[in-house]
Amino acid sequence: MTVNRVHIKNFKSIVDLSLDLAPINVFIGENGSGKSNILEALAFAAAAAANKLDNEFLVSRGIRVTDPRFMRSAFAETSEDAISIDVEDERGLCATFEINTFGDAFYPKWQLRRSFDVHPDLVSVPSKDEWAKPLVEKSLADIKSKIASLEASIVDLQAAAKMPASLLTERVKELILRAVASIGSLVDRHYKEIPLGDFIIYSPEISALRTFEREGQILPLGIRGEGLLKLLRVLAAEDKESWQALQSNLSLLDWFSGIDIDHDSSLPEQSVRLRDRFVATTQPAFDQRSANEGFLYLLFFFALILSKTTPRFFAIENVDTSLNPKACGELMRRLASLALEHQKQILFTTHNPSLLDGLNLHDDQQRLFVVFRNRDGHTSARRIMPPQPVGDELPMRLSEAFTRGLLGGIPQNF
Image (cartoon, rainbow, N blue to C red; front, side, top):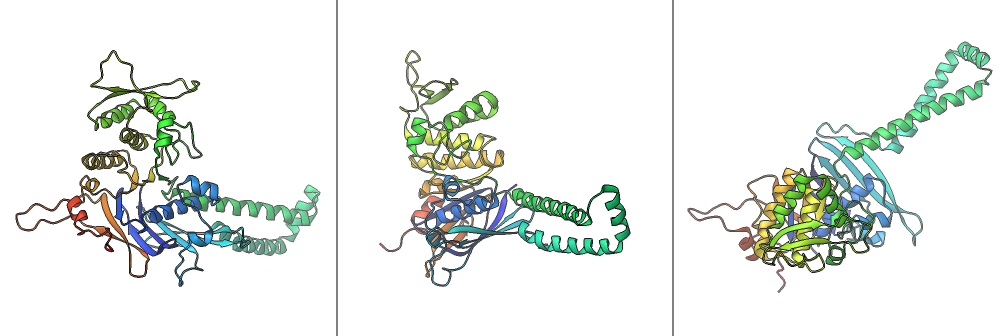
């Protein structure tokens, strides 16, 4: 299940932006154009869907949390407006999250209003709070009418149960309120059905990957790479097919010949053992502390996509980090293929033109967007369609089109 469309209003540099997403989405653009803000808006909506808008939880999802005033757009015409994020999935289910602030000026809190629609009929389903009041009022009015018309029955029940009529009426009210709570739970389930899931933004850091921090706040894999060793242990022990696929894809690096996992979690130092095909077999294997950065990022990316326990919908910031330009194109091909095979939906950001050459824009499941600031400074985005050949010439490579400025998304002020 995938998110097909997102509509973001009044979030950071975004005033009003709609995007039609695919399973694989790559965002390019200048520094500060708003690529990360698009990802954060989705993470913000996922936090709202889970009704967890405290700062600690937002940070653990990869959101750069600031004063709430700066989470909303700071443009004059929007500075007082609520943040609004609409998310629609491939079935036409649409959830709207309207988020504003309330409380003390020095300690503002997030206030959430949610609604649920079905597209294209747009049958509105109110939020849980909106369900309760009118339903209770109507139900109590009905009860009052029935009590008036069935007074004799009430008296009989009272006599049989030795219960005062006032308490009997209160008992009926209690049952009605339980019914209302059940309806509220049903609405909550609708929000959980929208495939935001545990959407988070991964920005792996070499310190977490090299030292193998045990676990982060988000399981099974933290946004910086916390918990990677445990995830690798699970793959190696419980999912042999994915473990083999992991090793196969790590052969993207010519020297790699194998990886072994230390399964003893009680040891003070946790490690993996890596085999280099150029090193004599009589020599001991080296661990992640000696591995190059590019390998550790690849290990993280492939484990993230291959695992059945990681989110189905997530983002990866700067996926080209520490990788050779030619390797970036091949990495993109492999990540796209694995994501489609394992039903993952991913949003990538990159500044490396070579990575674009791994995209197949003729496949509608893979899309490229250029993000830019319009003349008013608002974040905008445009989908890049597949390049068309001119005459007998081959289409220009996306990397070349990007560096020549034909796609946009490169600085123009110097």
